[in-house]
Image (cartoon, rainbow, N blue to C red; front, top):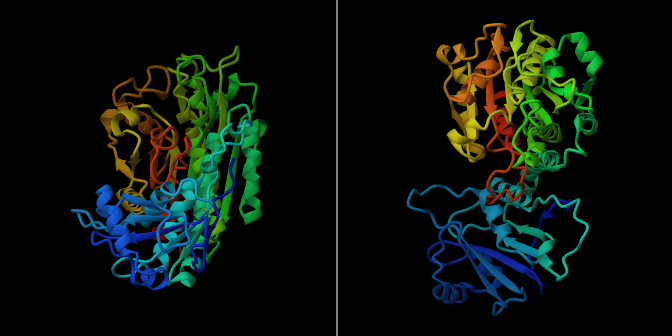
Length: 499
């Protein structure tokens, strides 16, 4: 795995061999401060823009090699002209986009000044976050170097020059804490399942203790005593033991403040069990712990930036495999709540993990709100694709807060329905419920199942099957594991729950 992209704030000199980045609008004029330091670049930019039909629109760039009058080897001009909707610049996306346009450079100096108006320190910090998110790569298992020398294989070092550098440095500390959380979540999702199995996952969570997070891991014996038969049933067919890990961050001014609980599905590999999946694409099921990865990344981000909020994270870690002792279709199991479940399909296993994890977090911590994240259903991908996660909730206020945090962070959610008609579809003739309601409305009946293990606490379920793994590449993510949800929930905490 490549090292973290280096981003610093400082003065610019555009030395030989470097790339200089400047921003322009439709008039092709860089900021006055850029002109004052590097001379009148407008004629050079206009000539190159005319030759390439560059108009300065957002998410477009102009790469000028060996620019006359500059020691820098490249002048990369990035457009920021408002579009027809006159939407403000998304500086995180701008950072990621810019990273993608300086491939091959070893040092990049960014003249972070608005062509018109001003960009403050917060904007510069967001831009730096975009650079970090785009620069992530997971290549730790590649041993062969490229036969052709390719400088583009290494990320450049970035220096951001801003007239608000002091404020930018201060704001960037929180942004980089969030970046670390996203990178951690991505690492977990990208690891192969022979390396990251439940016990290893639990061991890695212990690294959060260095940041002041209290970590506790329950083994199978401890879970058995608590009656977590739903979670344990999923892992019965695996040679790997299951774990339930609790993470507590107590950052609120009052330690008595009830925590927000965040629960993650952590199926480290999902073969489907006895109801085995088709072989095509089964390798992707190493990412079926994307919800748990998000919870761990969130707790890292909150602790690293010393967030003033009490949060408890719980992840149920299992491996769903077929063997002679594996869970079977037709089995009936009793959950920690006492409710009984008829197993109709052993590939509907994530909801069994959530059932006991959710009950445990309510019984143990009495949280004021619960949010669970799970790569739960392929049905949510059919409904929403790979750009938006499905949101289900029993509380309008919590749902609205999550939607607002999604809009602000760029990790968007779309609220889906819950209701008695859907709930009836999981009633069983032989037990209190069955673990799937059939193909139609599959993401909804899965959420209805999960809701049966929530008491009166405000609760939200986020189905991240389409966003946590294998999502489409974007300006800020080129990784198979996206780390989706860390920025969403960090923003939720900052906007709605911090002191």
